[in-house]
Length: 180
View (cartoon, rainbow, N blue to C red):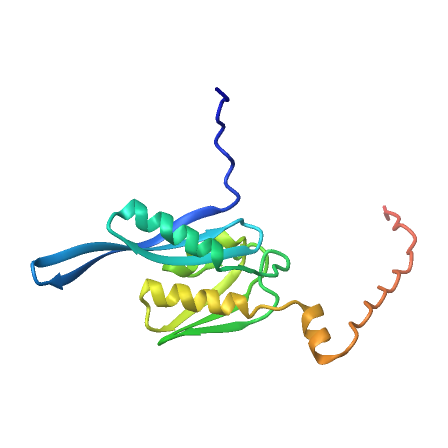
């Protein structure tokens, strides 16, 4: 028999929310579970999955497979996003602003989980409208799918990227002597 090694997971997965759903039928109530899961590689690749099943573990497994089919790439610039964006889903709106190094992720709930698993370390977020976890997580994915790099924006406009200007050399000053 060959020894079986557990394969390292390519993506980290985090459960955002598990809902208990009850459906009323003729004989009584049917109980199901809905799992909202986000997967990511901490390098700008994330996916969101929502799935239902009769057991919690089955719902999570199904949600992970849905998330793997819905992967998006996010361009990360200096541990933050390159520009300000607004994401919308149903009645939820989310505003993201890039932040300087050391700021951290200033967001709450599902938005924080998604940003951390995507690899964005410095960003400021504000949620408007509905604040439920499913809508805010879908609005977050919508916003992050809109992020573009400077090169993509220039290419869409049909312009060439400007060349960086060389920094002027500092004039050398003689070392100061101490006066006694």
